[in-house]
Length: 553
Ligand code: GLU
Image 1 (cartoon, helix red, strand yellow):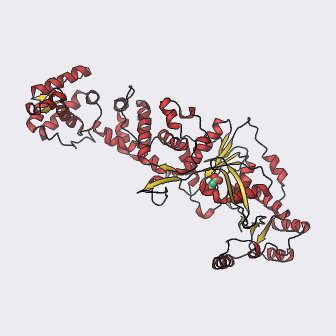
Image 2 (tube, rainbow, N blue to C red):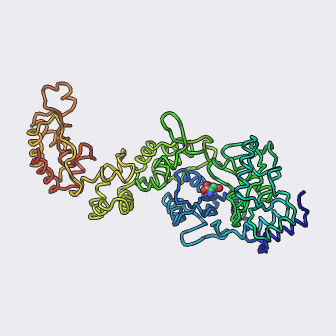
C-alpha cells in the first residue's frame, strides 16, 4: 500500500531534515533568463575524468553555435558526481581543451571558480539544491528510500536473468516501494544506508513519444524502473542532476551524444514528474571510424586520435580542427567554404537541419586536407606565431631556432604564401621540422641522394658553375635563365619537352640540374621554391652548402 499524503510528508521530513528551502525559493533564485526571442541556452556538461574525447567537440561546437548565433548563452557545467572517476586537474584540462578550439563560455566553471548567476556550476556543490526537489518528490509520493544491499540487488538481477524477465527494480521486485512508514522510520533512525528511488508510474510495455531535433519523432519504451535519484551519500545520479540543473540553469537545448538516447525515457519522465518544462533534445550521432570494411565507434582504448589532446600535441591548428568538425556537422559547410574562402568560420549559418542523424565517419586524411587548406590561408605571421606557441611545449629545439631571428623565421613561412595559389604543405605543426628544418644549419643534413642520372662529376660541375654565377639580387627570371644556361652548358636539355623528344641527345634535363641544386641547398628532394629558399638563406649559407656538397660528391 502506498503511503498517505500525511505519511509522505512525515517521510520527507525524516529523510531531509535539513532542507528548508522550497522549489519556489529556487525558482526565484534562478529566474527565467531575460533573453531575446529564439535565444538558445546551451551547455556542455562533461565529467572530469581527465580524458576529453574528440567526439565531445561535436556537441560542444553545436551548442556554442546554437547559443551564439541566437544571442543566447553557452555555459560549462562540471558533472562531478562520480568522485571515483574524478581525476586531479581534470577541470583545468576540460577548460583549456575547449578554449584551444575557441569555445568560449559565457558562464560556468572557470579555473578560478565559477562565473555567472545560475551556479554553482559544479554538481558536487549543488547537493542542497537537489535535495529540495528530492524532498518534494517524496512529499508527493513520487520517490522513496530503498535499503537494499548490493548483494540483494545482485540477487534480484540474477533471478530476473534466470526467469528471462525485464531487469530492474519494479513491481514485485521493488521491495521498498510500498514499505510501511514505521519500518522505514526504524531503519532510518537506526542509521541504515538508503538510496532514493523514483516511484516510476511507467509500466513495462508502455511507450512514449519524443521529438528530437536531429533524430526526429521517436517512439521509445517508457521507463518502468524505480531508478536511483540520490545515491547513499546524498549525491544525485546523472539523470536526476541533469533534470534539476538543466531546468534551473534554464537550458533550452540539451545537446549531447546519442549514447544518451537510451536514458531519454527516464529523463522525459523526470521532467514531467518534476513539473519542469522540457528542453529540446539534440542527440548527435556517434563518430564512426572505418576499420577495414566495417564501421565502428572511434574508441578511446584503440584510437589515439579519439583523444582531443592528440590534435593539440600534433599541432593541428584549432582553426583546422573546427573547420573539419564543421564539415562533419553541417553537410553544406564545405560548399559555403568553397564560396567564402578566407571568411571567418562564424560567418557560416549553422543549422541543425543540416546535421546527419546517422554516424559521421571520422577520417584523419580528410582532416589533413582540410588543415592544409586552412593553413594555406594563414599569413606568415600567423603561422610563425602558432608554430612558436606549439613548439614551445612540443619541440624546444625548434622553438629556440625559430625564435633566434624572427624576421628570418617569418621569411620561411612567407615562401609560397599569399598568392593566388598558395602552397599547401603543412597540416600540423609537427611537420614543420621536416618541412623547414633545413633552413637552420643545426638541423640541416644531406639526407636525400643526388639524382642518380647525374654523375658526380656533372653534379660537381653544376654546383661550381651555379655558385660562381650566383647573384642574390637576381630576380626569379634572371635566376632561372642562369640555370637554363647552366643546363645547356653541361649537356642537359633546357626544357623537359626537348629532352623527351630525344633523350639520347642529352644527359638529362633542367629538372635534374635544379634537383642537384635543391639537394645541395636543402638536403632534400622536396622543398619549397628554390629561388625563394636561396634568397632567404643568403649568399654565405648557399655558398657554404654548395661547398659541403662538393666535398661529398
Ligand atoms: N556528463 C555527461 C557526459 O559526460 C553529460 C551528458 C550531457 O551532456 O547531458 O557525457
